[in-house]
Length: 286
Image 1 (cartoon, rainbow, N blue to C red):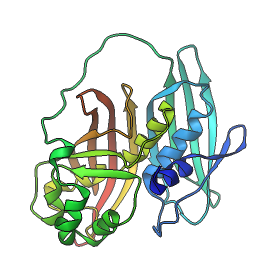
Image 2 (cartoon, rainbow, N blue to C red; image 1 turned 90 degrees about the vertical axis):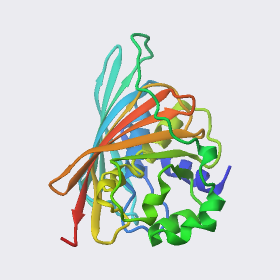
Image 3 (cartoon, helix red, strand yellow; image 1 turned 60 degrees about the vertical axis):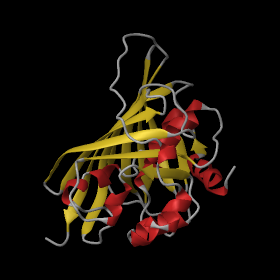
Image 4 (cartoon, rainbow, N blue to C red; image 1 turned 180 degrees about the vertical axis):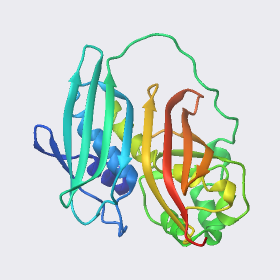
């Protein structure tokens, strides 16, 4: 297993301090604040460890303060309800004596029932898009510095944007974005690990989608961007170490906030999960 994926699994493997109390660490990446997906993923790990083997079907989160990557994050789980079919948990993440994040998550026993799903968008597959080597050989030099830094270091997630040229142009685009994602190495077979890894990954690129109609990106130094809330629903089994299409769109931006939605499909077209997020997109140049 690659070092980057091993490090990701280590970050998600929380230390249990008490029955409902856990401690998480941040990677030594030099970031000024904790990546939002990390807190989502760690919170889901904490909640899952108290849910008696049931799997999450939805989570709803609020980001309240930027996380400090230099100190641990304490996660306290409130066991709201244990029912015959559903289990409800609330998680509060704390640093420096203040809540920085909260999440409500619902877990369910496996059940059958009605079934339908949205159709997967017709876009080029991951093998039809530029490989990592091709990106590094050409497009990388045209990308913003933070994007170049991301591609140049070893990382646990491989991302292949369909509309990759948006990072080399300031032209306004259609309000949608498609990226293929997967871990760069194989994960253990435990479904809970795959759900927590996807929750971690779901915060990547989503807020950035709300800037596409304006020809901007979160890498623009004149844009102040931060996730405000995040919701996710798990529909069907999947593996986070196999290609997943993250099909995103942005129905609205107003009040310095951008709203984006995402559907996550397996490569065979099966809808695995849905995501929605609103975030701060403040124009500092205005």
